[in-house]
Image 1 (tube, rainbow, N blue to C red):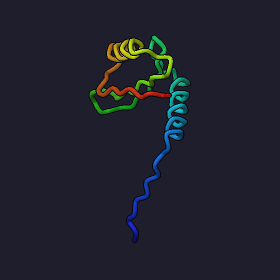
Image 2 (cartoon, helix red, strand yellow; image 1 turned 135 degrees about the vertical axis):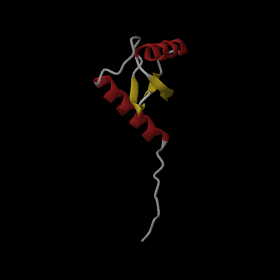
Image 3 (cartoon, rainbow, N blue to C red; image 1 turned 120 degrees about the vertical axis):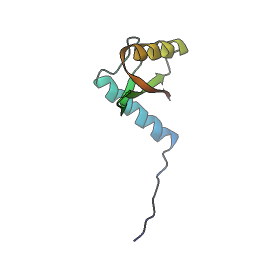
Length: 86
């Protein structure tokens, strides 16, 4: 039996296309902060959830700062990440 694991590495373009699809899915579910930053999330355990904010080209650092504050105020944040989508 062959236990070889094959890992397919994504190109930057493929990664960007994947992120754009993720952003669109999250928008459809209404996962957007009060200032318009889209986010994804999932359960991290009994203490809360992990969150990823999607920083699009038009977002400023202040937008991201406000989005982080929004999530901390409204949700049980265990981990928080920011992913550039451009």
